Length: 429
Image 1: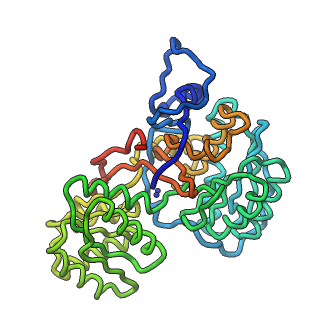
Image 2: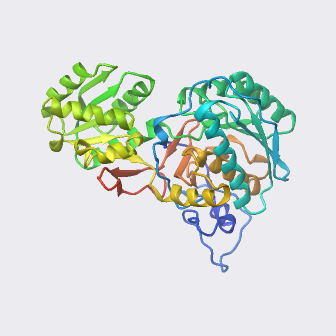
Image 3: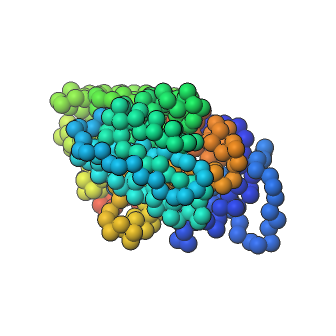
């Protein structure tokens, strides 16, 4: 499920060399060609190319959200079981640490196992990768992350993938920065990103920017918002205000609610005659409750464009009469469907939605190891402004460690959401 900017573009052969490494059912890199008449060159960098270099990663662009954005694993896990034994997967010369809470309790442990499976699947589908994954179990704690990271670094890891929890990322970064090793973590908390620590996750800021940009491009200028009074709501609020201002719009009302939504809902309902778009950002169950409460308070939601985030990708939202026709930003469903089919065939189970993050991370480092020589994980490579194409579509890392994703705009319908604006094929400058 979840921004912009940087120097140096990969030349055409960077993606061209990788086209034949992808599974046959996987979409080809953006702008890539397969003709044998093309001349191979020794260039690795270009200076003018601005089209997206979808290097590698995995499957028909973009994945459905299937509720995945509603439960980001950003906090410490509960008591864990016995630590999983360290595992090395692959025989390549480039060693990569993968830090996951494999022994953590509950959903975190389930997600970690699914992400581990996806990482191994990426290695299997990328032909002859020069990668060895050093898989470490952090148990869902900062102490475990620090221990696993140290072990991976001692064993020669050139890059660390993970951890999953926001609280564990700084523990890993403290060690990797001292060694000049970059991290691609999976937390959705942008506050833990920074120098040498990149987040490959669904950041809510990307959802907000995309949906506000789309609404503004269709003529919406006056926005109201009703948001949860929690950490997610705070992040979304800041991104929403910035996005509206950037597009020359105005926020005519913004209310936040806790357990009691009465006052916030009443105030928003009374202000809707001044707005032409209403932004609701919460999980599927809560956003339905808020929409129903607004209707009960006298708001006519049929006369205003409803806007949301990837949290709306939820069966309850599709079934809600009040939310029909609402628009939200999320990855297009095609990529995740293809990935899920291959995952089921290999592991006889369903992947968690965050499994694609591990797949794309491993595919990315395998591609960079093949094409970029000694500078394969340097900041100027990782922050290539053209970005990369993965299972969940285009993404690129910012210098501050956050990411930008190319998202589709989906329309809520009773039979299931449908794309009304596709994901971009390239990033702007």
